[in-house]
Length: 165
Image (tube, one colour):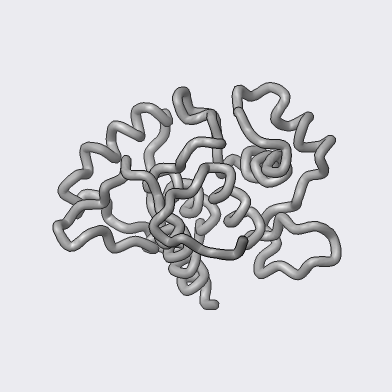
């Protein structure tokens, strides 16, 4: 089924697979836009993820392992079920870590910046989001909302545009 269903949510595994593929985690012989990541074999993925608490389907393990090994994603208590929906802040955080040459947006301009600070406390690190977002008309970012498929594609397209694509 190739129906996009743009308003449906997207899981962490689905989003991670999408961004990993854009940034190089592809089987040998396939062409990639960027070679930031290497696709891990199933055995390599098992080894990398063996010491984590991630709950992830077998198909997604090579992508998750590629991102985890590079420090793009990390274990955060309450966020390790990668079969669950991804929040907007998680998606923006992961994608931004791959865009280290892109200017960051001033998160203080959003009315709900306190929600971002709560995520920072949970993740244990300062969140910096690449300038790939504009937020909502009401001045919010809605970081804890689940990401939709349309939003995921928009983030990826915005990231590619910032990289000159």
